[in-house]
Image 1 (cartoon, helix red, strand yellow):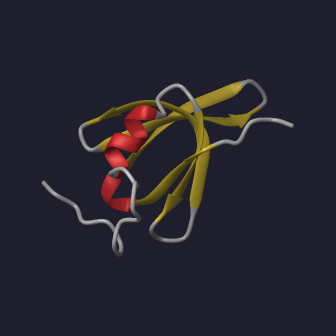
Image 2 (cartoon, rainbow, N blue to C red; image 1 turned 90 degrees about the vertical axis):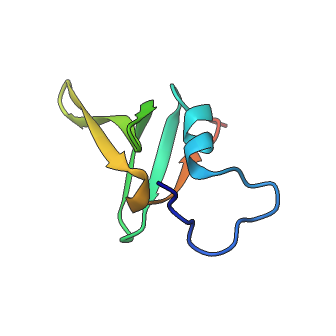
Length: 81
């Protein structure tokens, strides 16, 4: 099922699912369409969703999944300086 992006795509911009696939294994920030966000390691892309490993507290981590139709953008973390 095709989910349109909000507004016209920028020249050279890749579709969100393709962008997500290229970022597997990297730390990312996820901007949600409702204005919230999430960050963590992008683990996989399957079934129209991204799976992200997020830190909870102490030594606990959990994998959360977000459907593409709720995501506005996925941005890789910048390098440390």
